Length: 333
Image (cartoon, rainbow, N blue to C red):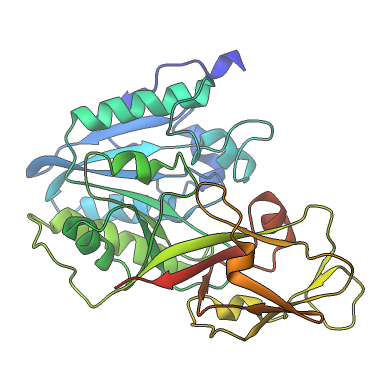
């Protein structure tokens, strides 16, 4: 795809975004772009939006920020990355048959990897104060953050958004993981797209981070910090059902998404195996199979062997096939 071999657009002004929906982003940003805006504190906040094209919360937060900036001086410089504009134009997570823009931030040989490498170099040289990558997600989840270090600064940044945080480097090659190598960095998971309250929460996070002039060395609120035990995968050939009595290979509760961020005790049922072998696997961030650590079979029931807190559970079959059913976490001290 030779037309993706381009120097990233560099701007020093934010074009007028009023009334422009994310799927029309290419009317103002024909390709991915980096916008540098000068503020009172010169060390910039790095902000990434539309890394996934159908996750519009960052775009809407940026539009709100532009309205706010019309009457307020920027308290801190901003370095804004406008991500996968081609996917946004199609209202899809990523362009079909092209890499996921939130998996390209480690070494690779595609045009997308080279784009991410250029952005990383520019951001690193800017010595950012912090980095925030704004995302939506599937499933019924409270707002939470992905954080990659337990440094006090990262946890304070997280606490500006939510008391819930996952300590993870999975999946590899995410934007915030790359930025965390040289500054506090989080992925802010803002719930479903198109919800005004989620867009306001994203905007408020950015505004709070812009007004932060130093790190206190501690979170601003009490936090629940989790480590990820494993990612729940479903055999691609298995038939999943979310309704009792429907024919399939594995049955999950219809209210599965309500388990997100609620503790599930050892011995509680997670699923029913309806046909043959177990199509449910759990793997670690490095790909190690830990299914036997997490689950046991009692007749047709799949039982949790330890106390776990599920997160990102979804009943959206397309999302499950493309990614996973969700994650199992354990609270850190």
